[in-house]
Amino acid sequence: MAKRNKRFKPLKRMLRRPFEWLGIGLGYLIFTNLTRKGLLRACDFASRVMYRFDSRGRANAHANLLVMFGNIDPKREELIVRRSYRNMARAVGHAFWTCRNAVKRVRSAGEVDARAARFLAQNKPAVTVSGHIGCWEILSQLAFLEGHSMMSVAKDIGSGAMTKLLMKARKSIGQEIIHADGAFRSLMAGVKAGKSLGLLVDQNVRAADGGIWVRFFNQPVCVSAAPAFFAAKAKVPIIVAWSRPLNDGRYCCELINAYSCDQARDLWAMTQRCLKDLEGVIRRHPSCWVLNYHFFGRHSASEDGAARLAENEVKAAERAAKERAQ
Image (tube, rainbow, N blue to C red; front, side):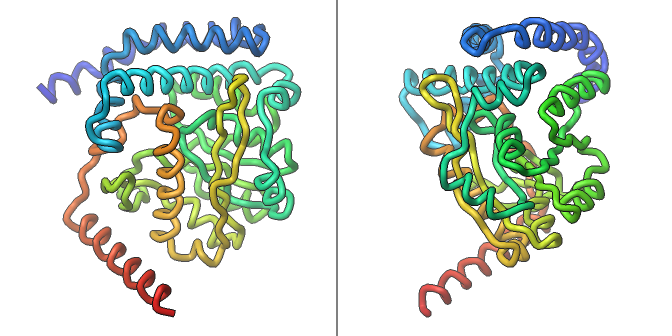
């Protein structure tokens, strides 16, 4: 069955491409011409359609919530998942909406709280870290408006041409978007030249591609250690932040935690701290996370990977015990 599904993947991708282009085209044609209130209404309608027909995504959301909280009341679960779809639709809609009059629209759609604003003003450049929580698209945009020259990474979405189209949209405010393939050198050169980085860490990355095993909701996951690596090498601080949705449909960028470049030298410990910071926010606001992403259990740790994770956890526990004793 697995071989059969693999054989039909190219065909499915080819058949899906016209619909992806239709969605992208409509996003440009419709969302860029809407008012902010109109955008929210359109995104909320789209989220209800997505929730209705995305059975696989709903199954992923259920599995993720089981890992995060165990069994929860079905009505509460439905409410969380529906709101998660709404949050995701609004984040994607925001990316299209800000293709036109980007600076004006970003200013009208979000703000930076006082603590985060002070940190950004005092630390240029910095490595900013977040996840697919709230409106992840607006974080780098707001940091740009705070005076940071921003660089972010984009992965392939659909066809190559579609990826370029979305990257062009994300560049509308002036931030620099680098394709994930071969991004390492560009990002290193950028941060050393005084540019800040905007990176998302709640994504599965194979160990062969530079991922390291940490724990997220007590589950072993393999994620990128790039934020810690760039901060340590370029000697810049790390800020973990997120964009909290406000009642009026706007967003507030909030600082969760900040770390020095010296702390980033321990790549495993720093990466684990970043994931722990994000986990704390997600526990309080589960509907703000993209729950329909197959995150937990997607890859199994090899014997070597599991051993390294256990070894790092032992070392971290020993360090914590020594700090408490002092």
